[in-house]
Image (cartoon, rainbow, N blue to C red; front, side, top):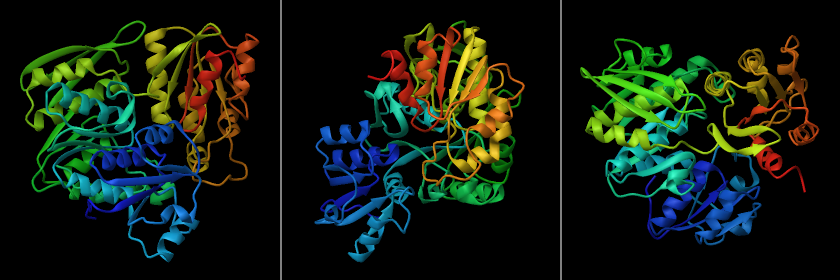
Length: 455
């Protein structure tokens, strides 16, 4: 794909996190941009405030005067608008093709892996910013240090991007260097098998710019195995003694941690407002990649210490009904487990988790794993599945997980997360910490709890 400065680009599904960032980036580059989405959202309203014409709902007339269309996997080829695009013989490009074109313009540092991509991408961007490298960054979540945006517009040549493996489209990218956090079975509805998922990661790494570097987590067996199959320059990070960047972390009561990095015969320490050993690992990966790109150790440490996290990642929102309320995006069993471990270790109080499963296929495949990951919480509430791109499947609901928690003293199923408000108002939740968790619309629960329920 080649960008044309005189073209009008229309984004189908512009309200998505990645799509909205790409649309804003083209707009700020001076290109003409418009878009449509099936539902209204805060991101849609932000784009409208920037002067980008956006529409709620899709209509053929929106394509009048358009030169090319950018689409997302959420709009398959048989979608009415995609059919209309082909009928009009308009050029259409997947969002990853656009992102790929942008990565070829300079030095793109790409973060990929099953878990931790968004936090790690944001952290890397902040580290480059604090070092004065002025990167452009596209993040899969809203970053408070970017004014709540998921985009930071900087100067050439540095770009930080999140390389999403979910549909395999990340093979369109041509990064200057890659940070690989981990690889686990996920998105098998798209890839078909774990072997195919591994193959997609291999194809992605093959797209690295000539003789460029791979930074990978030595703690992760699949990432290490994959790294061993490439002849490119490599740098590892992890808790293992033989990692190029070795990390250790001590959690602090109430949140936060002290992180120590050992690299090239030296020891570096800093304090982070984030908690969790998974976040310490992510920060070690950022340090390793920054050093690989030529940044000094002290420069990198300043940015790491300053990083404040990403919205919907262990995000504290306020206190109500005797609970400190946090929101988190965790939607894979591993993410649920490590997030819950962090809260239990740092806060040491009763923890209630309201978990909304994401995708019917993932819920059916990981029902037991989700139950095991949630089990340490003192109170567990599982809601119905947020289907996203999938149609409902008979027999698949949040009950699958709760059925596997039959021996838990306080695990229950509620069809709708709004029902939690009544439990809180009736005093049926233990005081302590309440975490809303999932990749769907569960984020809407915290505001209701904080304002005293639906109005």
